[in-house]
Length: 130
Image (cartoon, rainbow, N blue to C red; front, side, top):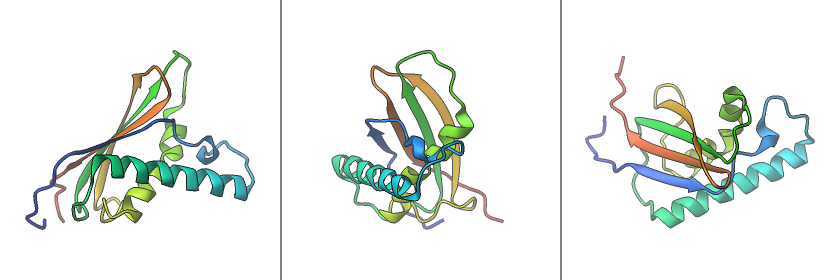
């Protein structure tokens, strides 16, 4: 641990993660790249709205919740993969030191929402070293 105290960070992205990142998607690389850039921008905007300016978090518990407006069945595994560009941008933006297994743990869930959204909560996590 670094001895630094980190506040919990919550960002709300006003859309579900890009379908182009689903393992089942068969899309052209350019379309996937365009979707990734849009996702990166959404994370940057959400971080700016929160005023994040802390040092990178070295041990984090990340809660991801997808808000949906209907009762359709959705595959959680696909949504985990679709969330990748959001997590990658949190590393690129300096919020997370890394997103490997030594630095983060994840929890995933669903909630009802009037529009599709993705809520990402990041809190310090005393991951055991060893």
